[in-house]
Image (cartoon, rainbow, N blue to C red):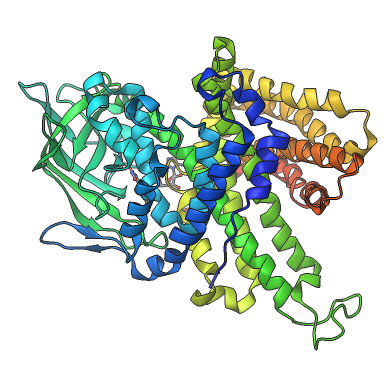
Amino acid sequence: MPVYNPPLRDMQFVMHEVLNVAAEYKQMPAHAETDEDTINAILEEGGKFAAEVTFPLNVSGDAEGCKLNRETHEVTTPKGFKEAYAKYVEGGWPALSCDPQYGGQGLPIVVNQAFYEMLNSANQAWTMYPGLTHGAYEALHAHGTPEQKKTYLPKLTSGEWTGTMCLTEPHCGTDLGLLRTKAEPQADGTYRITGQKIFISAGEHDFVPNIIHLVLARLPDAPQGSKGISLFIVPKFLVNADGSVGARNGIHCGGLEHKMGIHGNATCQMVLDNAVGTMVGEPNKGLQAMFVMMNAARIGVGNQSLGLTEVAYQNALAYAKDRIQMRSLSGPKAKDKPADPIIVHPDVRKMILTAKAYAEGGRALSMFCSLLIDRELHHPDEKVRKEAEEMVALLTPIVKAFITDNGHIATNACMQVFGGHGFIKEWGMEQFVRDNRINMIYEGTNTVQSLDLLGRKVLGNNGATLKKFGKLVAQLVEEEGVNEKMSEFITPVAMLGEQITKFTTELGFKGYQNADEVGAAAVDYLRVLGHLVFGYFWARMAQVALRQIAAGNSDPFYQAKLQTARFYFARLFPETATLMRTARAGAKSLLDTEAALA
Ligand SMILES: Cc1cc2nc3c(=O)[nH]c(=O)nc-3n(C[C@H](O)[C@H](O)[C@H](O)COP(=O)(O)OP(=O)(O)OC[C@H]3O[C@@H](n4cnc5c(N)ncnc54)[C@H](O)[C@@H]3O)c2cc1C
């Protein structure tokens, strides 16, 4: 059976030593009281919840899955899931970073994100139920009418009700402009909604008395395509004027998908049959409102893979120290044993360190992104808020796609450390691989993320936000440029920064002549930019570690950080050279292939 220890020390390192979040919160009136001790205490309790309540249900939830009663359309989740959710609500966890106006605790997003990383390590399938609820909360908080906020936000904040996002239909996934679900306006101001949605996570379950679906649908006179989509709240049970749960609404689960992983999460086909809904935001501007939820969910999906990378790493490391097989090439290391532990073999170390470097780099990026969101929401200076918003927009596709692709590499590598045992269910490693696989697909596939990054976020604003990230790199180079000890970390990042400037201009020029050139380069481009961002954070983490060591701190944590940084720059970062080369190969080798693909 797998093990999981919440990585509190590393979280504290990133939050307090690299990002100095508490000092920054002092400038934000909403968070001025949030100090290091408060954050640490919450995360310690949160870690206990993840390790003791939801982690023990991960393997059993995978084996058992969800069940649909075809007569009542009710879904039963795996044994223990519902009770774990009740404990989650009882502990006040859903309210952590919600608005105090609606019963929330008003804590920073960084705290919530770190807590969710641990929940994802422990049990991604379970975590998706509250995760989607939080996304629905955010969309309604940003775009709901005062009445809608009053009705729904306190219940979503407390976790008494949960939420979903209903976008996908059988014929439309990536291209939401194709969606057909219809919304007919009624005399009383509500809408009657009819259509079919598929793949709806947490669409039906037994945790709570009401489920609040956020549904994309089309008004009768709506323009074609994505400019004709509106957003609606469609509760499973209608809500009475006094806020109590009323009659059953015309939305039900018509089937459950049988899938590769996250078996404990109900992936539902949802049938809407004249369901009553109310509009969120303006007519035909539903995608804009839904983007609040989608952007939050994209960062959340990166966080899912971060969690799985961490738990896979922990298990691979423990196994590699215990499993003895063959002797080290340079002579026996465990002379008292008939063979050496496999951790002596260079390639086994490479697999484990890959996962460690991707987990710790991903944690730094995710926390930075969450801090930017805190700035965006609460910084008193409007210019700072605006800049934070732009930077989050640039980094979101990287968090989503780079961290989930790395999760794929890392969970597979960690499974490989177990040899044949990794393929056997009882060790739990193959579940991490299976559960992670969806993260590269949903919330916009990783290809779609890369098109968003290169097409919209970089070329779409002439590289303006990318230049702002470049300034952060330049600042670090200026600070540490003459420090010889830092040059092994700073030089590759500075060089890549310069190469990316040229590479981006080149792609912009080619894309201007032929848009397919952007599509042909985008996936490689995202990975290159991902390494620039990870490289920047690895250099900053090495900087802190070096300073601590120079000051006489003998905590082995800092040596570990430096060694992992060295591994990252020696073994993972250099793939940027190949990626730039393949991106430069252009669209011709992909498109001039009619005979090959006939
Ligand atoms: C387990 C699970 C849970 C899900 N949960 C939800 C949920 O809660 N709510 C919800 O609404 N949806 C959900 N989804 C749906 C998910 O978001 C979609 O599956 C995903 O967005 C892709 O859409 P699709 O499956 O229709 O693939 P398609 O859009 O058909 O894409 C097929 C392939 O074509 C590629 N492609 C498409 N367009 C382009 C392009 N322009 N350029 C390059 N490549 C392109 C894609 O990257 C992909 O590889 C879930 C799906 C699964 C499997």
